[in-house]
Image 1 (tube, rainbow over the protein chains, first blue to last red):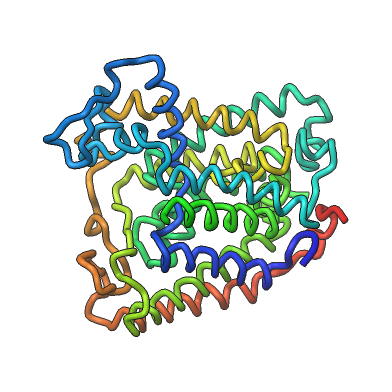
Image 2 (cartoon, chains in turn purple, orange):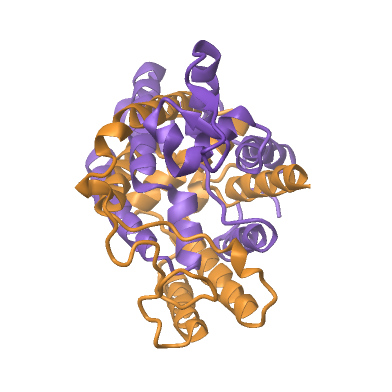
Amino acid sequence: MTGQLDWLKGGIALGLTFLLAVILVKPIGVSTQFVILDGLIWNTFSKELIRPDSTAKSGYASSNAYLDKSGGKYAANIKNPANYSFIFALSMILGGILSRLLAGPTPSARDRVAPASWRRRFGDKSGRRYALAFVGGVLVLIGARLAGGCTSGHMMSGMMQTSVSCYLFALGAFMAGIPLAIIIYGRK
Amino acid sequence: MEIFLALVLGTLFGFVLHRVGASNPENIINMLRLKDLHLMKTILLAIGIASAVLFIGLTLGLINPGHISIKESYWGVLVGGMLLGAGWAIAGYCPGTGLVALGDGRKDAVFFTAGGLLGAFIYMLVYANLEGGRLLHAIAGGKSTLAATPTHYPALLGSIPGLVVALALAMAFMAVAFFLPDNKDSKLSVPK
């Protein structure tokens, strides 16, 4: 089980992980936690962002419409960051570290700056890669929040539950992702 | 107890994403430009296995149906999917794999994650203008599934037993996983 797993072993491991999460707690999702971390940062600068509100379902309300939605669910999570979903997302970083230390696939120093396809196309300069990775991050999270989930929550957790919305999501993601990847990185 | 589970399951998920190569943007880019589909095969097999066991467990009453959580359908899901797909192709990361890549010591993932925080912040600010609009208006039965579940969520194919629909879909996912080509070129991107 060293290095990168082939698709058969990897697919079984990944499938069982998603299954275990649903059996024990709830379907896996990640992108909401970017909102929670933003809210935590924002909340340190603003006294008015989140306030206790006994009429709200979660017990909290927010001056921001997004944090206030669904009965102030996100607002409550920002007030209590030691909640399941936030700790789950942070733990994923730990999982990556552990796998690397326990004989998992290890990137080279150059891979850590930019993947090989990128270097072949745009060279070894780090600045452009970092700028475009940043732009990609902006697009990915605007998209994930508009869609209400990301690759984990929609594509994986959604499809295993036969959710209709995840087919819409996967259609959009591949419809944009495949042509753009071919345009940027070429086919060969 | 929940926090302990979050720590264990989150670490496991990060570990597995790293092990299957999903946190390596080279694998994502090569999947999206249809050069190496091994990650696509991994994902499809995972969905098939998880779905089949989930619905068998639900039917036998071994899995708590209260854990089922279905997201709503609206046109913004398609548009959001496209935006995510574009960023995914550019960066080679999605929100979860970007986090795992931080643990992998990838510097571009730091910039991706920072961009992600800005993107989520932008959405927080524009949400008030989208709320109640057509982009977020529920379609296709709202929080609906294809296969019937023992929950309040509506099923589009509700006249057929949920297990039958789910197993048919799961087998289709697994069949595609088996028949898609496994490009051995992928070994080139696997460091020893």
